[in-house]
Length: 120
Image 1 (cartoon, rainbow, N blue to C red):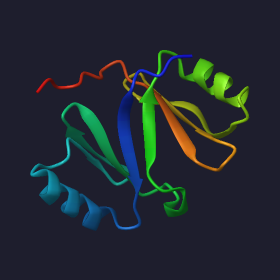
Image 2: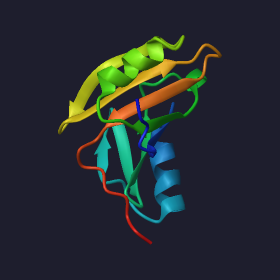
Image 3: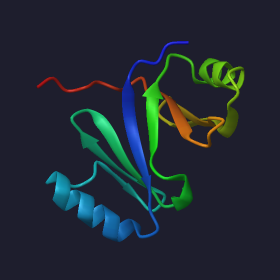
Image 4: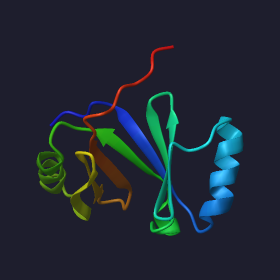
């Protein structure tokens, strides 16, 4: 099972409007995706997301790119992790899942066929 690098960082939020305004100012741009259930910013081709439905106690979730999310989840489960969020399609063929390491840390897995990092 190969990780292809970082793709997405999602912050849980209990005040979506305030966090959206803060990140818009910090990044100098508005989100490309703005819905009551999720706000997403494109930061150099990478995703910075705000999730009002995530538990604040889980902290930010970092998602690593993989070719097959279910196969990656199976690999992590065989290495003492538990499933935190089962694989699901968020739309447009983007599939995500989250596993919990034995120490409680979350590891996000994502297959995003649209991902293209910007070159500097």
